[in-house]
Length: 421
Image (cartoon, rainbow, N blue to C red; front, side):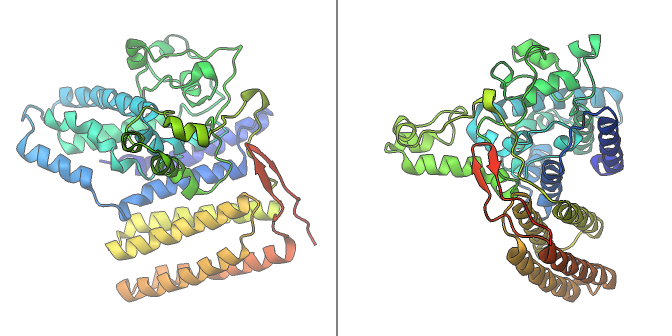
């Protein structure tokens, strides 16, 4: 059973409580642009199952039918305990190699791009992990652990990881020695030299202590969050694809065929010598680190929040209605387009024309949905959204000058501030 769906109300309540507590303590760790970006990636991650084919699931089915050892009984407590521990062990190696191999880092990097650290960061998930991550859980199926047990303990593992994404919980004494905590997971999200590539466990920090990847959080070296090659954008497409794009470019530019292939399997950070010489990448200087934070007017902030509510409601409708494959793809495309155009506004780039085109596409998808299902409520809801969105755009157009003068240098952004009429 996938328990994550039932945990969503808890996630929302916890984020609101953390936000309120941070404001009260005068130590707010949320920024609207960064949080909206993280939650956009979370909704896209949940929606990717409507467009991807379950290759991993089919492999699991074949293993269960023909290769697994019939040793585990879902009705026995030992099966659940073993599965819970073994899942976290498999996750440790997936997570560790997700940092140590570029092809796996390409999928995982989205989770580390946020330069803030709060509970919304926990929901900042990839949409491309399905490509290879399933390989690491094959041992569980070979042992004969039933699929429903694997899914349930996997969701429990993910739910546990949610609460450790906060700056407001200090070290927890003896608990730090056994379990993943906010303190040792803050280390994992930091880009400081001594914190890089440490603390991979999901529930148990024991694996890191056992395999030499543990690092304690130190008072004299506070974590700086984000990645060393800053993204400089809130675009979900760039967030999900920029490492794949970098690998493709390096492979294309490499002179030797051996290097062209090695790019895809090499350790993270490796590049062909000739490519590195011609196209060097400069990592950010942490002593001069500044968060990517383009100016955001209150009107655009409300508009971005409106779009976040819209994509969350769309995701809930998709999960409740289970649309057919082609309609699911169209609805996913609407969700992606909504997050992309909103990100343009958050990045300080003109978005009015793109948003107008997106709304025309939404109307077309609504027509396709009506023809496929003849469901009146989704049609009315969708048209109401288009109407409200159009009015919102007219209001924005009357108030905002697009940030056409925004320039990004490393992680620094300079823009001409929006002018209200």
